[in-house]
Length: 122
Image (cartoon, rainbow, N blue to C red; front, side, top):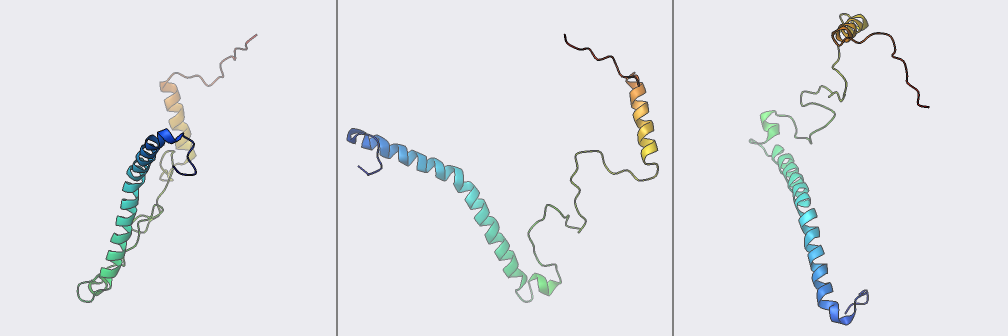
C-alpha cells in the first residue's frame, strides 16, 4: 500500500485498477493529439531537409522554401479577411445603394418607418 492511499488495505487491488484505468484513459485522450503533433513536426523537418538536397531538392528546382501554413495569409500572399458581416462593396455607390436596398427590403416586408408604441408593464 502506498503512502498516498486513502482506502483501507483490503481495497488496494481496486485502487490499483482504478489508477490503471485512468492512466489508460489519459493515453487514449492525449495520445492521438501527441501523435499528430509529432507527425506534423517530422513532416516539416523532412520537407525542410529535402529542400537542401542537391539535384532533386527544391532549391535545385527553383522552388519556394517550405514553410508552415498561415491563418492570416493565403498561399498567393494576399491577406485573409475575417469578418462576419457582408462582403466589401465595389465602391461604386456606397451608402446610397445600401440605404436604397434597405428601403426596398423594408417595403417588401411591409415595415413602417415609424416606431411602434411601447407597451409598458404596470
